[in-house]
Length: 281
Image (cartoon, rainbow, N blue to C red; front, top):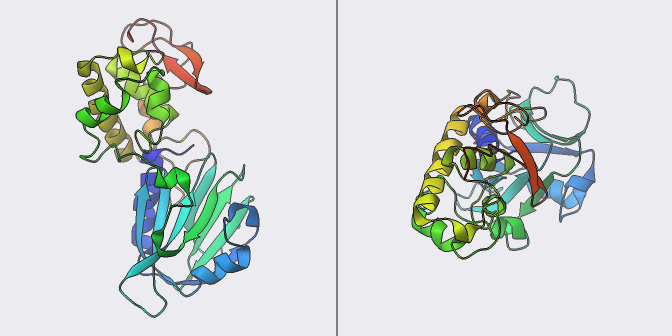
């Protein structure tokens, strides 16, 4: 699943291409990715609207839509959630339409925003007035990890009494928005913390270290435009390069870069967790 760095790369690559552009047509090839509006209502809500801003919240892309009469007040928001295999790419109209393309938005300049998703887990929705109350996953998100709101004090307060494993806590979007399996493993490795440690067993110093590692690793991954193993590309169809810098994720059976111990993998909260049994305590 694209995580914060990948979604941020999509956002930053699409922003200069889409801002100020009017949506002139909407083609829907698979209505199953549209919710909660019908395909007809979804198209009607977008045609004639101008994209005024491209934002990100956690793993969600949010497109602010200007009123059809040109009013400056931004009201409705188009939300896109890429989930496991979704891609949102701006392409020329004569570019071949890829298999598993579900929605195409045509812009005034002729370019097209194409949403493709092999597994069809992704989602597109329009929220009148930017009211996300019906989208619990978005409404309940915790603070952005690269913001000042995600502080060591906040993080410690949220997890210090929890008995769940620290890996599960890092994946909880209500605690920290946008962090996923790849970067949670990397954070725990750099902080030298076992993913199986109960949150309540962590000292304040360890939590402070984890907080700083989250910020550092996500910032580095953003600079590298995210991690591409198979499906992920940014809004221009370009792959990320952070896979070249991963230290533990998907390195099961390989030697640890710090001590040479073989990297192991276990399941935690239904997700694979990679770690060094020697370095991580």
